[in-house]
Image 1 (cartoon, rainbow, N blue to C red):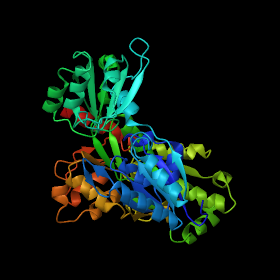
Image 2: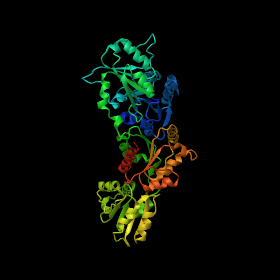
Image 3: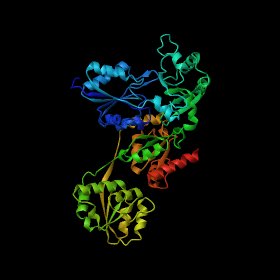
Image 4: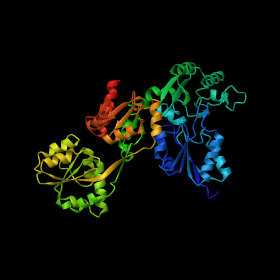
Length: 510
């Protein structure tokens, strides 16, 4: 191999659910200089790529090829020869009807190092998500994977229809929707019973999954009536009858909903996990990035005089994170706060304090600044010094009201949010194609920055029929001020509260 070349990873991206990619595959994407991806690779996986990575789409959809396979081969080799680490991202598994073998042969011929990272094939995953086990000891112990892309009527077919039809095992055809009538004809012609159960699973493992069942006798008419199209897999065999008992994926409460998450990526995982577990497909389009302040001088001065404070109020998890990171970086620890009482907005913020060994003296029932003010009315704070480490862009309610009560409030910036501009084009395309059901907002800055990603003259049309959900009234007020119609406002201003509000909305809408 030529050591001056880069390296290519032929990665199976899995069947559609981004959670089904392997750990190794995900690491390869994160470390790649160039990502070359297919039509069936989940778009959310691209968010894992380095901001510096070059992203190239080479998808092939129903005969509409962005690049021919030969040109894709050349592109992969050229990018590697430039010294890049190339992640070649292919839907499913690269060596199961994925032409990964052809790409590997080109790399060998060009002297380019490569590795194959297997993926979960849709042939197995889509039936599993439809509640169809491909093998079952009461039905069959054999399984055949067949390309459905080949014309079954051509004289030089490489498919042995007699063996397939006569076998008692499960048959799985990939890329065969267009040829479904011919596949059915050949199986029945060669002896398979017309009453054999059949299922087609479209967009398996994604929120767009649809399953149509029937028999070899009825399936063509049922698929036509359902207007089912590719991508879909075809399952033929008695195991299809188990779907009625074993289906699980399509019964989850948010199944079929595609939800955009605008929260900062480093904080989005809890919301994404919760919504995904409820059946939604989450698309991460972070509109903000949480970063340290431009300089630490204000916080450093406060930390130097920490012994003079009576209270520290933490208004967010980010406030806790950046305050203590700076405290620890200066060589101090939580003992520096041993004499200080603390207040927190929200149970999650209090939970992060407890992890550091600090209990919260005040935790208001409502998770907003006004509730903290009310809680302090029961305290004697006239003349007390209060440290308020928080975001640079925070509302002035808390320091203003506490000062009116006689406290001396030092407000210091421990973090700031910056607008994220990336992937606006992809977001706009999804909205244009009406592939988004809901957008979630978890702060006022996510609202304003999200709207900045959309062309102002088209925003109303792009968001037509899209449900907008907010974590609380402050965020909703910001949205409504700029003309957005918020349909869902959580009554408990937390991620679980937002998820519960979304569930209630769709429950009442059904």
